Length: 240
Length: 309
Image (cartoon, rainbow over the protein chains, first blue to last red):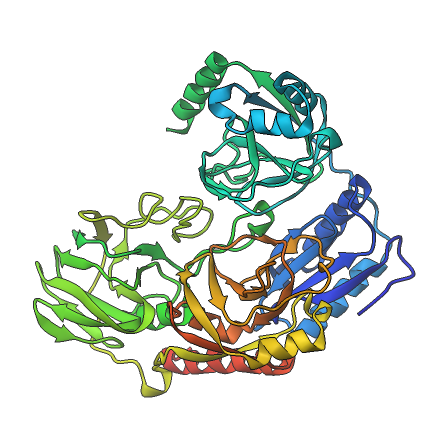
């Protein structure tokens, strides 16, 4: 376990099985920390790109999966410590703003009334609150192209359902606990579904299958059903 | 020329060694769950060991071949019939036009791999022909193989008869000792919890698939809720959710995990996960990093000896 004094953050490097290491940063999740993580991740890629198979940034950590036959864990650990102990210029990543159209009408919002009741708000207030915030992408995971978003108003916090729904359609927008997000592919899930976007969140035929990266920003724009159907048709035509 | 699936079987899909470098987008590696058997099968038919093959799960297919070719089947042992005559794993099988291969009762293991001397006509997606079954992309038409599907095969030559050397052969007893090293939250488990985990016997539940393997044993309980933050989840991670029952993550699993991990199956033992089925018995043991590295290197040496590389 290493604790670095010389750099602007403290961290430890822990084992994640025999072929991965996880760098855990000793500070709460924030936009500043996500920017640091993006920076360090890029630095690792630039300086030892051949040594790892995958690199997974998360809220407060970076996990590096490596080829055990090519580099020993001790050597990789040393390399990572060296990188972390250098002074690192913060990432100048230019955040994209993604405006994601969402239809909050009842057909696509199976749990909106229940969530509104829990939050003691009208459905209209829920939609107004959900669309008024600007969300920050912290990380991707869970499902292909799933964005972990920060910035949900505490007024919309709502515990996950006790019994997960078996099939949530792709594009569904939900709230679970203190998080909001979009199901990129059809999946079972325990979040309250409050709407649906026609925008494909995940397209494996693109070089970059996910729609956003950490540090990008997301804003939800309420649309009606006719607009939803129009956009859905447009996307179906362009992907065929 | 094509392969005609008269019956597809339970979960038959195209897999190779998977795709890497996309976990940061939430895309798990996929690929053959038993990465050892796919290599053996490809070697038998004279193909690069990472070539796409057909992964067969528990209930196998019935396939009619519309042209001559050489095939090989490795991994789980089924009763295999070619036009009604028994044929066997771990050796080349020469196929004539209109031959029918039938997978009958499964005897050992869970997943078999069929390799072909020809090239399956597939378009790689994100660097791999593997089918990602949960995200529905890759492989044959972005899905598992269904009854009556036809798979095109091109540009092949027959390969000469070969057998897997006895030293490379694997058997599946249904009773396994999986070796582990530490994972991210291992230190958060008490000595008593660790002792319980490494001393008790687990049973594989029917919830055993390419995403993960749920086990049942005496639950591991927490006095206090463990303090964890979601972070990168790797194959072989053994998570303990609030139920106290262990889950081992696998090739199509999530890339971010939110439950504490007590241990992680070593790379050398990951292929066994592909051969687990409901009712199998598991024990876990803790080994050192250097032993884990040595075990993987030994497997590599055995494979190199076989392939002559």
